[in-house]
Structure formats: C-alpha cells, structure tokens
Amino acid sequence: MSLSSRHLCKFRVEVGAPTTVDDGEFGRRFIPITGGEVSGSLTGKILSGGGDWQTLLPDDVLEIRAHYTVEIDGQGLVEIQSDGVRALREDETVYFRTSIRFHTAAPGLRHLNQTLALAVGRKAPDGVHLDIYEIL
Image 1: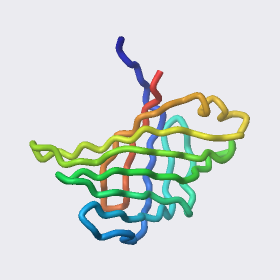
Image 2: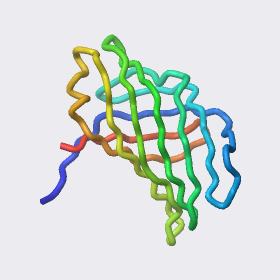
Image 3: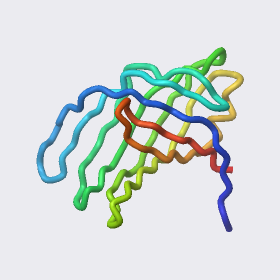
C-alpha cells in the first residue's frame, strides 16, 4: 500500500521569543505564535495567541507540539493541532515534519475535519515555513 497526497497550502508562522520552562537535560520551552499568513488553495492569516511546546531530546532531536488558530478568508476559523519532530541528520540536513489535524465549524471548511495532513517545515529568519500536504 502506498500513500498519496496533494499540496493543500502554505503557512508562514511568525513566532516570539522562547520561554524556557525546564532547562534540564531534556529541556522544555514554549514558543508563542504571534501571527502569520496562509497561502495557496486556502488563504488567510494565522492568529496571535497560539503556541508551540517543544522538548529537547538527545542527539539534536526536538519534539514539537503546536496549537493555534487560522482564519481562512471569507470562510471562518480553523483550529490547528500539530505534532512532530525536527532533527539534525548525520548528513547535516534538517528533518522537520509534523502531522496536522484541523477542527472547524465553518460550513465551507468542514471537510478539513476529516483530513489528516503532513507538513514539511523549515526555520527561516521571519519564523517557520510549512508546506502542508493533505494525505488522500
């Protein structure tokens, strides 16, 4: 069995300064989400007020758990729950993937409630960029 996907949209997520919650061996920190943009087949904005809880694991592995809200132009609000990992590979490339679940009551967007998506991410000077693919 193989999986199919199609590109759904892009998120450009703006973030604030991290707050260290636990600076121990397996540290925890909170990164506030301060805004951003949704582009592609869905367009809109990322609302301020969400956040990304991160746990630093051995070998430069970062566990990611983000929760925030996007407003899709002319359609309504969508809650985003994203869980994933960012890691530095042996070949010095960065592996950054998250699974995304959507929750919405907006009539034109309810199909997202039945969608599982995968995001391919990268850090950038202006925040985090995510290419989001719907798993078919």
